[in-house]
Image (cartoon, rainbow, N blue to C red; front, side, top):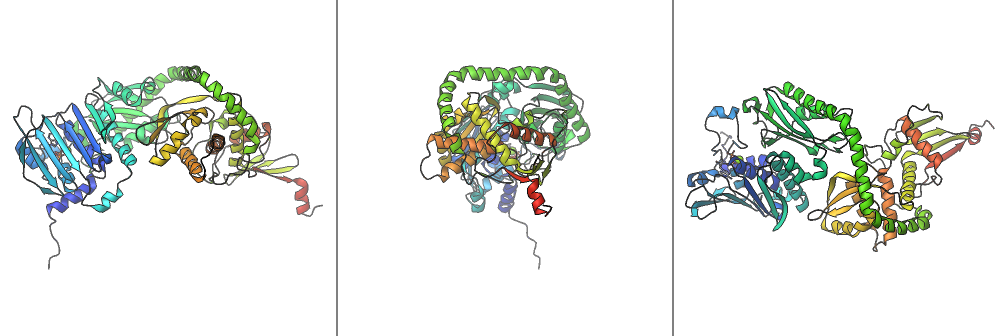
Length: 594
Ligand code: ADP
Ligand code: MG
């Protein structure tokens, strides 16, 4: 008895859809690629319920003849490969003829298209892989594809779709990638009837980058240009002073396709080696062109990964292009950047100065009255062993360079510092001590109206649930006063634009979540004073070195120096002790020497 069966095409398509179509953003990717391949200069996206209910992509491209519309939902139906050899030199974004049948097998979809110059258009619909009859229908020139109820027939997949905000974030990122790769194409996105992004046709990549990321960033771009027979590289990178916590802003395009490739990212990161703080990633926009016969794009179902014929040469060329651009500009940008930053400060101070002054007055009242009151126990805030890669800035600033260390100390278990004292020894909880030091520093800065805010080059976007969004927006004014400027950014998403200068490298997502936890835990609506003190607590906690974080001897020295300079460091803001003291006389008693 033979057990092997050839699967029906509808099931094959569903399986293929599992690889290519993961979420609404993947549908957008496939449809927009088709529009670009069709030569469209205007691509409009309309979404309902973050694409779960409807994804519509309309373009003004070449359109399809009736026979093509009829075939488009068939698997392996493509107009882009004519000969078998073509697969080795692909100039279009699509070529497998898999996207439309895949989409059609997991949704209720429709194509409406009219080729340029034709009198009428055609329409075809498909439902869970079942194709309906083609109809003649009036239509604008170009193509419109509608995808309703994605995964309606695969409930597990539908269940795995994330919140509206998350799916929208994936879609926005996808649209940004296309917008960067094709500056001349006009892209617009509507979500539930509201305009969420609009990128009018731009003259070049730089102009597009400016539309997407703002003029502030655009001013800092360093050009990259490198032409070799194998590879041409064009694009921009940012100086090492501008970094991200992950590689998300490494936009690399190969022949118009967004790619992630470990060789390329290795080359990029290497070019920045020793210029970045550990675990930070540079920001780059690179547009690579290779002869399409030099690269195999057919290795990954969504074509995000590629295989180069000569990866080594490409790696080295990218490395040296970035490296020499950074070197060339280094001498210029370092001083000029500082002045640029200072300009930003002074601008900030003048534009917000008035407002902040009066606010600061009332704030300082608050702080002088309630500084002591604040040092009470507030459970639930202290998260031990939490990962934080960064040594916070205030510590670094106080590193005595080249000093010979006089006191003897030792870090144990990456969490405690044992310090020799005149009368014995101290065991210090490094996080708790740094936290209370920062706490006082923040309070002092506020009291003396010295709280300087610094612009974030790239606003940090945080998606929230609708309830959390409302809760945070309620605190907006208060957070502003603490140097965290927050703005509404699309539905249920906030943008953090500034941070207090004394606290760098905060993990903003973490910070906001801690804050929300605090607010949500309190039964009654907290008054401003409460919230303010809680935020200062959280800021100090998030800004402080963590338990489990290895410190070098200079960092430890800096911490101990600060301890010496400030009073009131014996208890952390939550009321737990920061230092345990042991007298030598106590030790002698314990060892029965006395
Ligand atoms: P592929 O893009 O790999 O060829 P698809 O399934 O994505 O496969 O599309 C199948 C075919 O349908 C394409 O080859 C193209 O001829 C046609 N097509 C799809 N979308 C469009 C569009 N927006 N405009 C014109 N033709 C299109
Ligand atoms: Mg395609």
